Image (cartoon, rainbow, N blue to C red; front, side):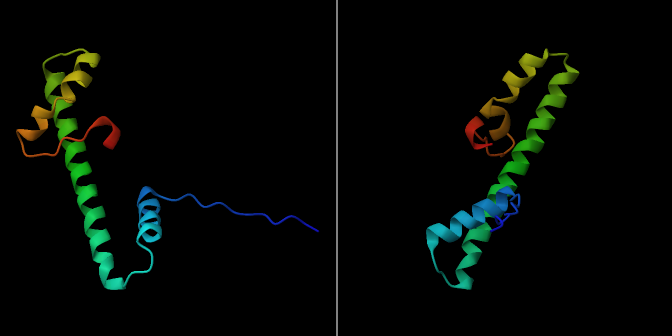
Length: 94
């Protein structure tokens, strides 16, 4: 008998999170999906704002001729993000 060949499909982070949400919440009405969609939208928004601000900080510091190691250290300062109302994301949350 021939072995079955399984095709693996790569999933995006959003698909993985959505699948985890489905498993954890079980069977829920379609109307309740808005909660998950809003949560994912907020996480995406916060992450994008953080990355944009991080790029701005690095560009500002490059103009002042800081070393690469110093750029990384200074770009991880929570104060640089909160002063322009951007959520600071910890290293393990990025």
